[in-house]
Image (cartoon, rainbow, N blue to C red; front, top):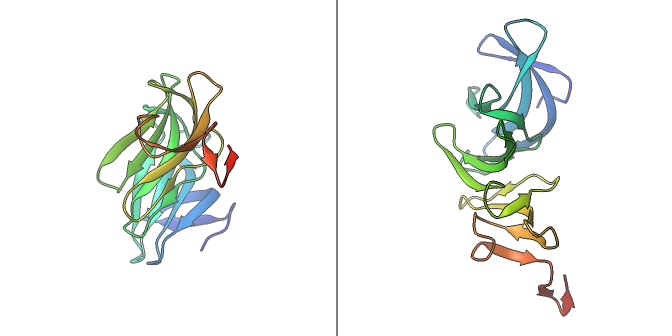
Length: 165
C-alpha cells in the first residue's frame, strides 16, 4: 500500500497520495489524491478506488461541482465509498458512490448546519453514518440520512447507559 506523500502510477498517470486511506477486506483501497492539472502547477483533487485486480476507479474529481473534497473517504467491502465535500454553493454534502452512481445522503442546504471534522462511515449494507450539528447549533449527533428526526442514531439530550449525552 502506498504511503502518504509517495507517488503511484496507474493508467499512465502520476498521482500524489495524500491523507487517509480506507481499505476493504478484498484488497481494494479508497483514497484521496491530487493529480497534476494541465497547467502543471495546480492539482485536481479526487477520491479514487484502487481495485484488488490492479485497476483504478475514479470516484469523484474536484473540477466544477466541488469546492473541497473531504480528506477521509470510507469504503465498504462491496466497493462503495462515502465522503464529505463542499459544493461551489458553499453547502456541505455527504455522498455515497460506487464508481458508477453517486447518491446524496445529507446536505447542509436542508436541516443540518455542519458535518463536523470526522469523516462519514459506510457499512457493508450501504448505510452511511455521520456526525452533524443541526441548524439550531445546540444539537449535534450521529445520523444515517437526511432527516434529523427519522435518521437520528443518537444526539445531544439522548440517554445512553443511564447518562445524558
